[in-house]
Image (cartoon, rainbow, N blue to C red):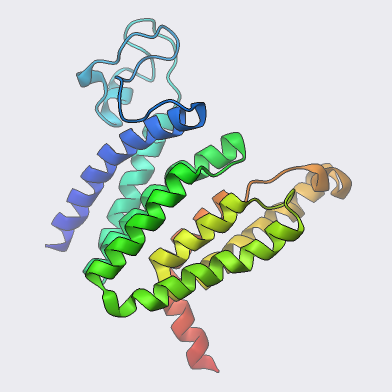
Length: 251
């Protein structure tokens, strides 16, 4: 039964990944993600349904538009594939229904947030707000006993990052604060692991960057924190609670 659930999750993840490509492209431009057919960015021909099959169509067309033969970025199948893997991962490790639902909500939001933050240095409210609403509603409906703990985790995580965002708005934005809140709403106490991993990963990259371009230049470089939070969230999704249990049992 579990292998079937994982396979179905991966298949749905591929379809959702295709939609997330639309979100990643259109949302920063202020274009509706709900209407309009996908088109080639070079020749603007509408993409045929049989050329819009996740991953498969890109491979068949060898990464080029059928009409104008312009190259199509490999990012599209990568986003679809990564989303499928994340959905399958949630199905494989979740222990109950609320973990499945909140895990799916989280990883689905993390994919476009990561790429939009990398491209545009911002995390849209149009993603974090719906994710927070769905997480709160789903948590209350499926697992009301654990809802208070998740709400506290979300508020605590957002509050923790709000301090540096308030003191140094040029270094951390409110989008990161809101994303931390969403992660807390989905993961509960394991959000502490997510933030710790994000801070460590960001620090390591800062050290590497400083070694490559010099400390003075590295300090001038804006580094989006959303991708680090997303990475931390995935680590916490997989190993957050076991790490917390190990830590609390060791002291």
